[in-house]
Every structure is written in C-alpha cells, then in structure tokens.
Image 1 (cartoon, rainbow, N blue to C red):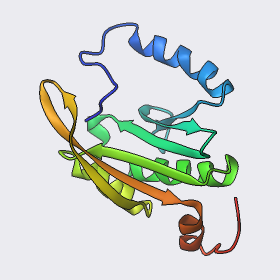
Image 2 (cartoon, rainbow, N blue to C red; image 1 turned 60 degrees about the vertical axis):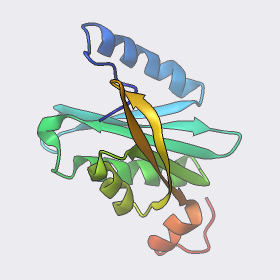
Image 3 (cartoon, rainbow, N blue to C red; image 1 turned 180 degrees about the vertical axis):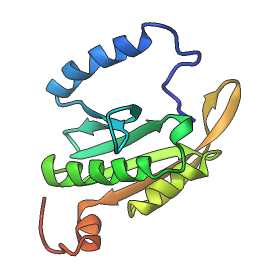
Image 4 (cartoon, rainbow, N blue to C red; image 1 turned 135 degrees about the horizontal axis):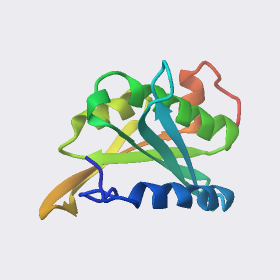
Length: 154
C-alpha cells in the first residue's frame, strides 16, 4: 500500500535505504524512525517525515509490516511523530496522503486529528492501475487545541 517502496524488494535495497537516512537527516530534509515491538526490539515498520524548511511543514509517511496491521503500531508511532514535528522541530503544518484504496491509512490520519483536505482523483499510477490520492493536513494550532495547549506557539 505504498508508492515509493519497490516491489519486489531485492537483496541490498534495505541496506542502501538505511545508508541514505543519516545524510538526509543531517541535511534537514528528512527524519525517519524505526517502529519496533513494544516488548523487545523486533522491527515492524518505519515512520518518517519529509521536511520543507521554506514553508515550515512536514509530510508524514509510514509503513507497517502486514503481520502487524490492526495492532495500533502505526497510530502510536504517528502520534509521536506528529508531537515530535510540532514540539521538537517547530513545524507549522504536517500533512499526509494515502491511496483511496487504503482507507485504514485514512483512519490513522483521522485519529491524529488531521482534516481531510481533498482527493486528487487517479493521481498515482501503481502497477498499471490508477489510484486516488486522499490528502490530510493538521496545523500546529489545531493540534495544540486538541492537546489542551491552545494559545502556545511552536
């Protein structure tokens, strides 16, 4: 249910992707965290944010391995990433999108308090099929109000 992860995922691709994370973080372009089991350290997914310094916003993205779907890992990680984006990075806005055929991802974004902003019909082409892009966004003031922190600035 992702656009940018190649399929099939060949040997060596994970190592190459992991090696790209530090330079991207140090450049201030992207931040990525592993999502691990609550008990232990088994990798179940990843969550990250592309950062746009000029406009002071971030685009949230994530993936969770299929065996771990429906267990709350994505929602928990995304809540923490939103908090990190607003409190630590000082972002003004966080946005995300999902395929129209993946309503579970939309439910995660709604649980974060994100507001559905629209749909770009058949915006993506994946595996020779067209997919809608459903867009969501959240402003720091909206997030702070939901946290009971209205009036505080990031």
